[in-house]
Image: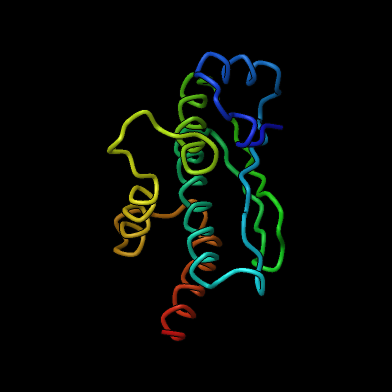
Length: 150
């Protein structure tokens, strides 16, 4: 089991070493940081966009991919189960995802939120088929709730 929070301040070689201590398929946990009734609709919407993007990135490098469907009423990390042969690619992907949660990019132009927004725009325009349709569904529900409250 690897939690994205465990990658704070790690370099790619250190992530690979961590992966070597795990069994394939890998269990990757990404935090769901919001909970219904305790967070705004906008925060919940963004949280599910981040989860959908993380799932998309993990699915793209996996031979097999599963994810846990966590509802907005729960405040728990989401488990992704992935079967990956290329540990270097997995380490790079995990580090990229960590920029949305615990690490900061050395590139001053880098904006994780904009990358996620672009992904969501591609899903919305049906240019990309989402690997985590459940997260897209919840995102869209809260996007509409947010619009209704405006």
